Length: 296
Image (cartoon, rainbow, N blue to C red; front, side):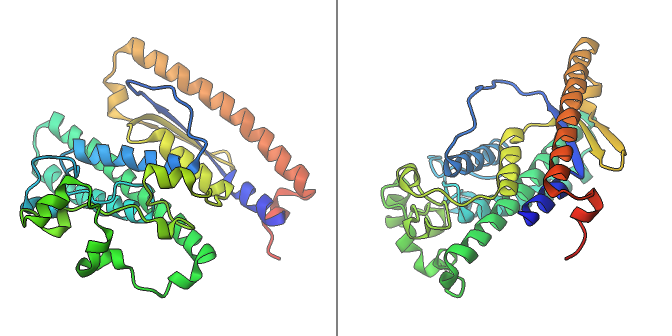
């Protein structure tokens, strides 16, 4: 209980309010099944990488042997899928930096800079998710930590190939290298991982997410790959930092007024809730705030 309170108090040291302008909202609830939530988050990241032209979907009929390092082979929502996303988004970050150094057109430079930030977010969040799966593996399947990862050994990939995918047939005809063929659902890692197709995912037991893990995943899912136009960060000491993007500055005055109004109301609501949580934590601890963080 004391560790839980200490962790909760640590999370309360900083309050962050983000305002996003998003089109085509589905208004659907966050999935109750956390495995599904992770799969949808991975799908959002994959779609963005494809839209940016950095990778190709395995369903793309125009895949060639030269596309081997661009084909997204992991189409799930587990550690191996997010490792691929981290790798590809990291490559995208470096590419955007190279293009930004050469670009002179302000509009194009702004687009590249925006994409650079989104790709950096995908990379960072993917590594955060990978860390969660590593903890699950350590706690739930420690015996597998010393075993080699067959999914990283190209000579053993036949076992992981989705043989129903059309690319596998092209691989059999030697039209594509094995590195263009997607992997199959990993039922044997379901205890700690989530690289499962929809059928296996819905039948697998839920993963033991802690509150801080869920908080990170919820935030990643809600923000997705949208651009944040306004951000305010409030520190427990009272310091307030506000960030305004060029996208917001260039909006029509009427739109800016609406967005700023929404942002300010969000700040008021968040600070009120923040204060209530602080009071609750201190009451639960029965100690001063400093004592909560004192060493045992």
